[in-house]
Length: 236
Image (cartoon, rainbow, N blue to C red; front, side):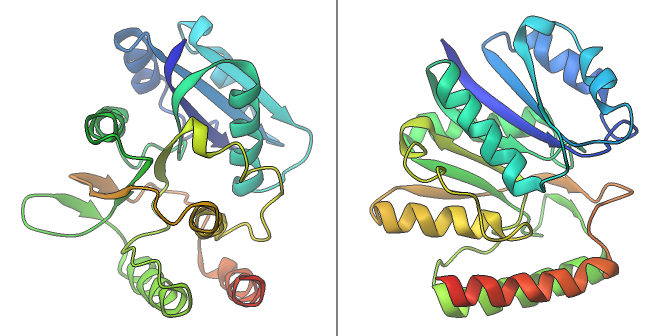
């Protein structure tokens, strides 16, 4: 039984996948299993993943066409739930904006507190190192504030790509595809609240997070983001 399954959604990540970091982590954490979801990549992402070692701790899920991060994560969760018992299932961005060791620390803390879910939060405070571009920070804060006004989740950072959940609470909330690509994280939280508002969640301030070059989010994404905000506001 794997204690922790980590889903890594990948779309054209051949230049950003840090093989050294993944290999070192895999060799020092034998109880962890990675599920790399190749989301219709057009580059050599699959080959780069295939070069990782030890391969017994890795599974590659190939989606024939690009379906977006939310659907890649959802397909990864479904695969994990259908393959083997696991205490926690998490997902993490392929660029490792947060280190694998710090992400593993979230898992350890969640187990210690018996939390139903935990997610990283990019709160800039004394003693930590949060590197975000000014534009992304401002746009992110505006969007989160707007959506929280509507949904009252009370979370500071819903969009940080470092989250994990007890496997048992995911079964009934990932059957249906998400309505949005950019805000599937919020949809996931809303589904959890609808299922059981008493779930215990932890927002964990990260010690380090860095803005990695060639991010998929830029000014050209803004029209799609606005459209999806309206979809989310109308659906829930």
